[in-house]
Length: 279
Length: 336
Image (cartoon, rainbow over all chains, first blue to last red; front, side, top):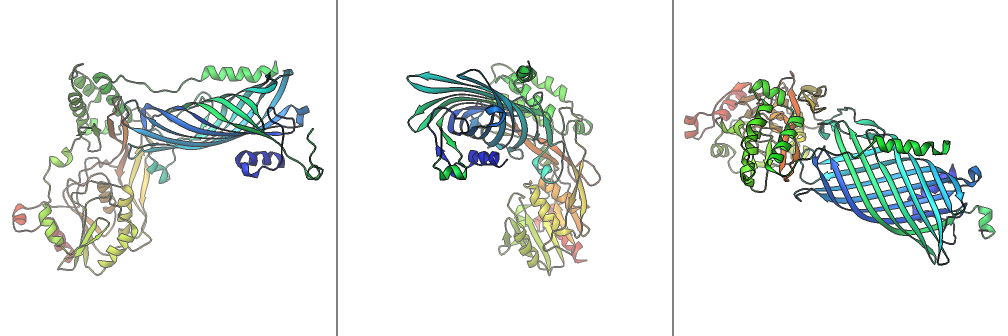
């Protein structure tokens, strides 16, 4: 458990990493991969509490991921954390009103691995996560913004394929997460935040499942070894939706990602004293 | 087979789910009218009440105004038609905004006498009055405090109220003149009125729509006025009202009527008990509409105003002599 907590901390606070760099390009068993990417894309947002119209515009995002292949289950169990943030500025179709949106989310989970062929690794597992965010409309008065808060359990599947080209080892990866059950905050259909602030509660915590909050997170990326670092290029398709309290919400974004990956191995005290045996 | 179970589950969920989207309308005269009609039909909180009170038939309104459309009409002609449709609601909180104009229904004040002469009122304040974040106040010759408050969005804070009430503390009574105050922040109305009660009082109820039906409302939540923990007024006070007292001022008057040492004098308030929300049309025009209903302490509608405890009208003969009938009546009552 302490080790898991450590991986979570590494995922959130890069400055706290202690360990020894491994050679780049592919995850090493027992090592932790830490990937940091930034994304640029477009977002489409609808929140009928604020407006019946969809807004669209650019989105800037970041994603920090840790991936650790544990020794459990005959080295077939991995632990992953994802810290993701996004900020977007969108407008309606007539460019007469603008939305500002931001969110921050953290997910952690385990995957079981199968290796149907030496270069291919299939993964399936589950993740738990939480998101917090806001959507602000610069034109509305008494309903200018929406707060977002949700937590959920997701099913997650993925595949990694190691490809050798030009004497280098590239890793192709696909991963998809589908929230299966959770809870989210939502005001009532016509409920004002003034009422909520006065203590009026009206089904403001809503249970979610794919029938009322179908969301899907998909990412495909390629890791390209470059000397000391590994370059990561990717594409993220992030669909977040809900239909609760008669309020329809969608936040659909598609982004191109670029960043780098580093592989670390956490050393025990005696390994550190011996200089770290990284075979 | 087990290992594929989760994939089957994922695929099933994909089939169950889909894109969450809202019905969209074309940016045409007809599309904009339909979008506006639907926003009001599904979200406006007074359709049932106004069907009873003023005979509003929202379905008939749709048919009536659709007939006034033409594909070749100009932008401002469409604006005029849509504003006419909204005018059927007779609600000062309902507006349509385009770059050239603001559609409005101000019959709640325009159809009634103002009961206010600004020049005469200013003569009571003179030139050496104090100003505390929009609250203008002074002590009149007969030791009656007089405070004019024109705008509940002026940012009146607890420190301002402390200073004003402390300055007026030796007066025999206080006149609070909110005539012409078209509203502002509910929190300011609550903060101000909390200076006039020593105990927690039921002042009204609030309810919001829970669905698209005209009668889909939440259970009304009681609203209480908590006594301020700071300086509170302990002497008689009279609030002067007219038909221009609207929205948050209407709520202020509602709250003050529940305070034991306070009476209201003048004309009925203008109303506006719906808390407004915003929406928009396919062409980008902004719509404002009443979304939450506020009632008085007896669960009665106050959308069309609150009658005063003491009805009083401005006498034109008094105005000609430079006297304000409402202020003079209030002074006389407070001196007794």
